[in-house]
Image 1 (cartoon, helix red, strand yellow):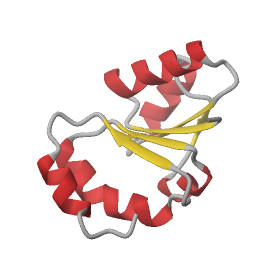
Image 2 (cartoon, one colour):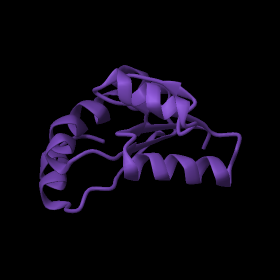
Image 3 (cartoon, one colour):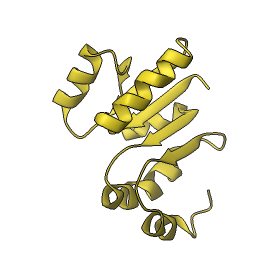
Length: 108
């Protein structure tokens, strides 16, 4: 796994990014956020290697969704449409029922 996209680079997403880089310094961590300033700060703190957008996840080996559950429910179907057949999407949401229902009929 070399291309990891973190959607939401706050406390949880940023911590995961740091740990992934510590475990494998060769991974490339891409950050995705609504706010450009969040990505600028994540770059300055070396949490991510590059900024990205949702459209870029086609290149992802792994996508980590670290955003509120209601935002995940809205974004996940679009994300699954874009990710490659071999890409893996995980979330760190506190509940799964709404997330599962949002994609229960998605082909991926």
